[in-house]
Length: 511
Ligand code: XMP
Image (tube, rainbow, N blue to C red):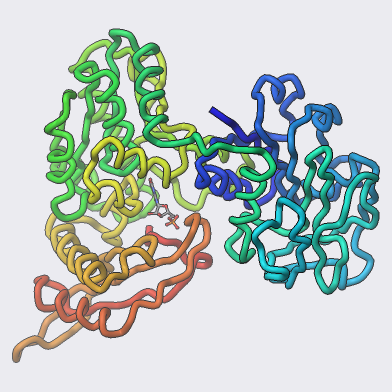
């Protein structure tokens, strides 16, 4: 399989570059700039991409590369910091932009030299997305200038002989109109990619390697019903069949019919499926608890306890499987941001469950690839296109104290919202949408009588990474239908609110 190597200098769009490469059916991995030259050689890249980064190449503390990388005979594309690094390393001059004109941020009209393979098929000018305070005052010997903006003459450089290219803008972001084409050109016109990364092949390769690794051992997987653990389960069941046991802890905090759907999706497969109906014990432990972090902690702990009990019944397990995906792998070990909410998901299983090794069959895949693999494995679309759902489930969507009655009401209101949103064709545009039950009661009138009932709040966001999010503008007619149906069909609810706060300052979930 052909492989692109992405060398990470700490820019904010690094995962996006990798996704764009993979979307073009070319495999790639992101590695830190500290990767040794020997490792790079052993990786045997078809091409190398240097990412952007926050530093200045002329700062002695800035991340650099072993100059040997330029002697490997492998094409290199440098983006932003990566572009400046190529220029700087090969004898050019990079300086802080002296005036505002050379410092560029945001959308910039750019003119391309279309005889450069990187820009073939592009119009003579189009918009690119810039974000740089440094600029290449002098380009190194052997390089030509291949793009300019009205403000800056040195927007892109190329050395056709050595196949080194650099762009000051970010081709990986949506705002760069022909960014996808530029990256595709690098892969196909410059590196000679054949597009041999397909999910069908990946599936076969994974199955073979899982079989080799596991032999006749037993594998245990905690199935949450989310996309990742479901796809991992389907893949492992194809690989090792009955040696796999999936434990699905139904904590009673799932959405309407969700538990049954998960069971139905896995009951026809050759694997041991255990559904533990633990609603009662979860609700008992949560009774009277109102503080969000305490709720999260209790749900996480109880989950582990139930899971351990089941693992104990199965006996000695050799492997614990997890649905870890590539963004988690890339992110792990980066920074130590403040804990806003202690996330619980099935990935946080106890290390004291008795097993020898961990298997993470999705650790090199992005979310969209996980979905593709799920389709390849024949999982139903309802499972595959499921929006993210937090590990603590509706436990953190009933604000304040939980009860079965409140959960049932919320399940129905949430179902109505999702049903109407899908009928209106909004499902694809909203990245996450759900109803939550507030702990506010208010007076209303129904028929001729007074009501004193709870209010439901609708939440819908658009986001690419869930770190920041904008509230989605649902058309009023749709909101009207949802609101009317909820107050008519769900007993105990007499008001519907629509949340119009973005993240930050709010978060997606309420607790
Ligand atoms: P917040 O509320 O932090 O949510 O803005 C961002 C995204 O994370 C999801 N989320 C969770 N996912 N376990 C998870 O697996 C959790 O405990 C958890 N809490 C929030 C949330 O649904 C949104 O997609």
